[in-house]
Image 1 (tube, one colour):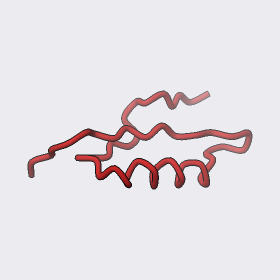
Image 2 (cartoon, rainbow, N blue to C red):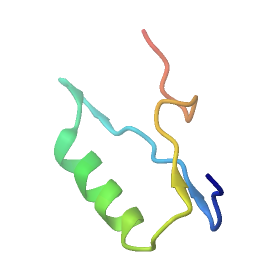
Image 3 (spheres, helix red, strand yellow):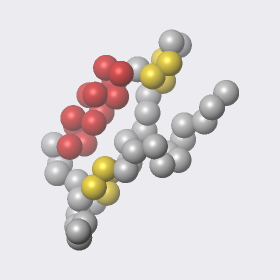
Length: 50
């Protein structure tokens, strides 16, 4: 497989109760509208355990 285009690294939004799934869905949908060459999830984009 050959990837071409911009790679999309979505950042996971957190709220007081954990992952803000509504904000995550909105962010993913907005990024996918631009037809990225690939989406890389859970790859060290700022999520740190407490």
